[in-house]
Length: 439
Ligand SMILES: [Zn+2]
Image (cartoon, protein in one colour):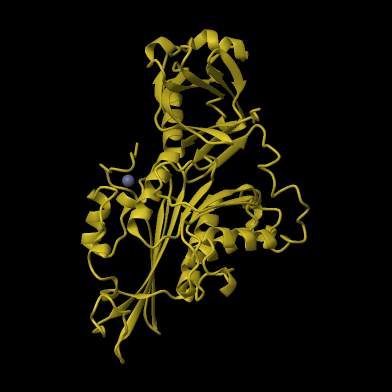
């Protein structure tokens, strides 16, 4: 017997797309509709319907003018129409073909935050849209209904546990408590990020990492003990996190982000990548762009400065000769949907790596992989990991509270005891980009 579970249907668009359609509708009062194609991502729990572009229309768009199997969306500016519509009138008005999927969202253009109603027409059946999300500088998450599993973090009385946090987060508190985060990497920075997100009270964490705990991970991977050597990093993290936050839904996945068959729950609010190779980072960027997810990437590096390495053989671990310096560097980038992706925003120290990020195919060897790693990198440092992660998670909190004016990049560089430099700036992707489209 097959167990049938009810999927949630959520429409997601970017603030850029939404604002452009709204302003055009206000400029042209006789435009009652905006129409665009949808990109659908189906997981076990949810159908995510991503809307990347909208065109204004004076007349009701018709299914016969769209492709046979297309998923498409119509925004109806209700203030232009004389009376609200029933669900049945939706089908009659737009006449979607039988194999099409049509989403209809009714909004008042004069007061778009006042509320919405939405329907999905699929194979002759009509059902309600469960959620509508606008992601961007001022994220808007509007849900018609939230299933009990989605509210797992909110059902337990937590007044005492979060009594110090709630006044600090203010109006952002509820959004953080409801958040689902996809975290790529469960090792050094990944384990710190998991701990901070759990401490902030998020509702659900999906953590993926294909690797096993090794002895050399114990100097920087929180939660792991000597008894965990040989076990999955993601599972070890998940078990310890469950003890710490039994009310949080935790999904450890022992796969790689590069896995082409990976089907992740679509309804994440944030993707965090804590990976140490560029290929995995580029895969994450591509997925975040496709799912319209805010993408927080945290990268750290400890390198020798002006040093001669000894020995110089690639087969041996690097050692610094005495009286040379080291540079600690962290790059923290939060890229918002519709403003580019990690690849075209750049931020790499060298032109060679930046060109690689922009132009190399996904399966390429990175410049780092082409030369012995110990000619540049010395290793990892837990203090740097924790510093970078804290900057990243705090940046996400600022995004949640609407304080950010766009995608942002922080670079921390520490060359000597009196030379800790922090550079921060808003960034935007460059087109054309192989991985994203900015409209
Ligand atoms: Zn891009």
